[in-house]
Length: 117
Image (cartoon, rainbow, N blue to C red; front, side, top):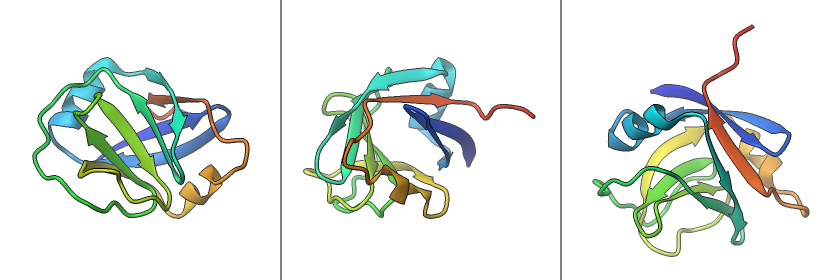
């Protein structure tokens, strides 16, 4: 597992990314910032990572982070079922993902290494 921070506008959540091709390529590009689109209880944005998915899933648990090669998107799930099978690449720690359920939504996500100190 690789621990990274997800910065949604001014909200910072800790996440664990699974070892694998997606995480390896993501680490090479950090920090990564993407504009977000909301779809139900899901946020997604394009990332500069392009891989072939290895294990596609039809359901992702709340707080799950998934990748789809259909647009090179990182998807953040907090209660939504994917529109098509995706590969789970990580998980937001604990139940902090509930903070993503806000009527105003979030417009941007930055993925970065944890701040020291």
